[in-house]
Image (tube, rainbow, N blue to C red):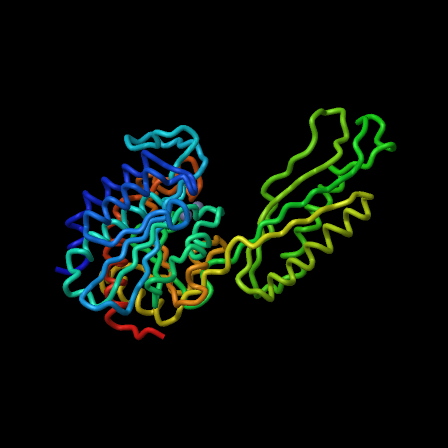
Length: 394
Ligand SMILES: [Zn+2]
Ligand SMILES: [Zn+2]
C-alpha cells in the first residue's frame, strides 16, 4: 500500500486531531495541553518521548531497523492571539486565541506521520526524530529547542518541515532549491521630542511630525537603495504616541520588521535604516533610540533534498502543481534547525475559494480545506523514508 492510501485510510484520525487542536489553541510556550496529547500519542505508538525540550517542546524518537541515518521532522504547535471569527463547529473555544496560521494542521499531520511510520518500523532504514516545536510565531521556539539540544542525541543528518499555505489551492506545492523564505529582523525606534501644549508648538519639539517623516523616508530604502533584482521588505507595524488631542507628546515609538534573503542586502538595508532614522530625526530636532534584533535566518533549502521532495510529491500526485522556484518574504524559525544540517521546507497549498476557505494566514477567518491533510501526511511520511533510503549523510 502506498503512502497516499495509508494516509487516506487514517484521514478521519488526522481530521479529528486537527479539529481538537483547533478548538484548544495555545500561544507560544504555553502549549501544555497540546504537548501532553502529542507526548501521550507518540508514547502510545512506541516512540521514545522527551518532553520539556524548549519548555513545551516534545521530541519523539522512532528507531527503525538501523540506527542511522537520522531524519528530523519538525511540526510547530503554537496558536495566535486572535479572536476567531469562523462559524464552524470546531471553532476556538478560547477567547482571543486561535490557530490562525494552521499549526493545528501541522500537529495533526505530524502525529499521523508518526502513526504510519511506527507501523513500519521493522523495515524503516534509519531513525526518525519527530520534533513538535513551541512558539514558532516570533518567540524563538526553534532557537530554544536547538539551545536545549534538539540537534543532538542523536544528531539528525537531514531535516524536513512543511506548512499549509492558503495563498495557494489544495493540490499545489511549493519549494525552492536554495533561499525560500526570508530572514527576519525586528526593529523598535523611539523618537524623543519635547512635549507641550498643542496650541503652542513653538515651545515644543514634536516627535509625531518627526516620526511621520522618518517612516515616509524609510520607504525609499527598498525603492532606492536595494537593487531591483534583489528583494527586501521594511514594514512599520506599530506606531504609538500621545494621550490627548491638544497635547504634543514627548515620545513616539514605532516598531516593525525587515525581511531579506541575503546578508549583503540586509547589510544595505540596516545601514540605510540607521542613517535615515538618525538624520531625519536630527533634522527635526529629535533624538532617537534604535533597537534591531534578528528573529530568524533565511530558510535555505538543500538542493538535493528539495529535488527528492519534489519527486515524491509528483510521484504520489501526478496531477499536483509543484512550484520549484517559490519564494516568500514570510519567515520561519525552522532555519535555526538547518544552519548545520541540510533541510527542506515544503509549502502545501490548502485553500479552496469555492468553499470560502481562502482567507490568508493570521486572518480571524483563516481556515484550510482539510482535503490537503492526507497528501501532506503522505508526502512527509514518504519523504522521511526516501531520505533515509536514498541520501547519504554528509
Ligand atoms: Zn504564522
Ligand atoms: Zn505558521
